[in-house]
Image (tube, rainbow, N blue to C red; front, top):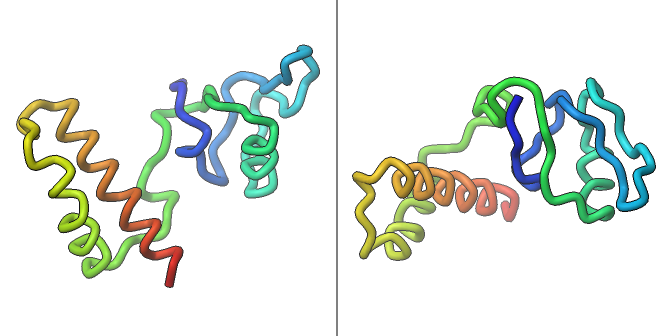
Length: 110
């Protein structure tokens, strides 16, 4: 199991722990497979993190990105990381996630 930010969750993931509101009421039980409706509700409820089974988001569950969008996102993000040492593992991962997120945002605008 892994804890992920709710905005990184995607439909099809399985909850490793139940999601409760601030008063302890059960919102979604452990073992539930997340749907788009669940994800929208989690955002409305203000849930910031989830415990999911497996290793978290995988690219196989997401639609593939076109190379043109990835290249555009790379160009936009590279300026943000111009003064960082991306040979550092954490920064390299952060940059990769920023490129993927920007490419997905560009794809959703089309």
